Image 1 (cartoon, helix red, strand yellow):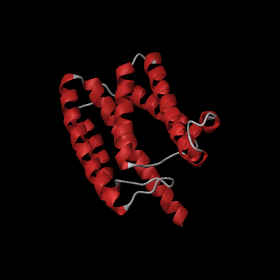
Image 2 (cartoon, rainbow, N blue to C red; image 1 turned 90 degrees about the vertical axis):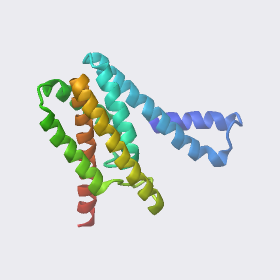
Image 3 (tube, rainbow, N blue to C red; image 1 turned 180 degrees about the horizontal axis):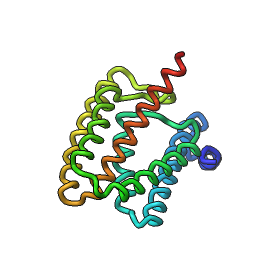
Image 4 (spheres, rainbow, N blue to C red; image 1 turned 180 degrees about the vertical axis):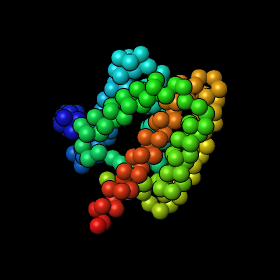
Length: 192
């Protein structure tokens, strides 16, 4: 559906001589990404409103999108699966952030170490459809580590000031780590 809508937009622009026919596929891909991001944002907003956790939803969205951009991990093979997975992961995060409110700093720290371990071991993981050059891999790895340092500082501040958001941040990072491990294991299975 997202592909068809993106194609309709690109066809309209081609028919009106706004874009060149040779560039049509590039525009379709770009519009697919834009539309998918809008759908994901609307999913987050809807879940946040439904569960009365809009700030947690936006925190999940920001942390997830920024971190995954540089560390990679499992990617669904269709936009529909991607949107369903994204919504499910957000829902899990929002539910667990409520359930784990009494979590101690040590418990969150251990969860955060799981995330850090995955970053140090695997980041970045390229996408089958968007390979990363060796030079970019080094750059993305450094960025992944710096982002992790930033999240650790934010997590500590949030734990002291707004514990619920610290829990949301930590759960989001653990989910990102799980997606990295899933992708690594999926690739190992493909090689066997």
